[in-house]
Length: 245
Picture: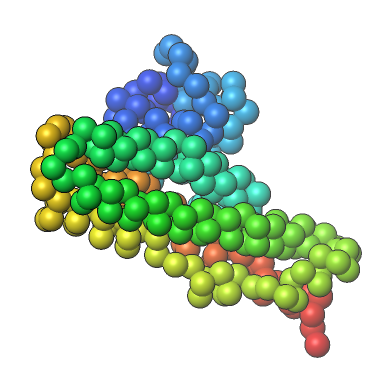
């Protein structure tokens, strides 16, 4: 079932509760009564078409209209990607850290193992921070500058110089797979971690790790299948127009 603009926003959440995180990234708050997707998006000044494309990729894993997504502006795409970064750092990572801390504090016999687990996730957190920092400090400013040049007949020379020092292919070659360590962490818990006193904490931790892994996978898919091809085509056009020699 695809989400359309006339469906009640409450039914979107009932269809797949993972969409709660999508609403959060668009700044949409609960309490929208029986308003439709279109009505709620208009209320929060959210692009309805873009919201539908993103939310449908969460509802149906086989749904991925990359050609349609590529019709949206680079700014719209990068704004969403940045909000996703914020969601990871401000919501998901602290939740997981809290669960690990609770497991460490409630355990008496396996504390050393859990402390190692905590260190493993702390190392992963630093890797995630470095990954998103590189995108926000280098990649996104580049793609936004590129869009500015693409939309201009006489772009500023300083912007053109930026385009001579970087390309989206550099980003793609350096784009590391940050889901792999999450998979390793899950495996350690599933295969080797002795059950803590409160097994519910362990199960909840695993659930959150699976959730984060899938979310990051979807995030990477938008970067690699939407942003990269769109930017690459813009680079080709700009090279034809401004770098003919």
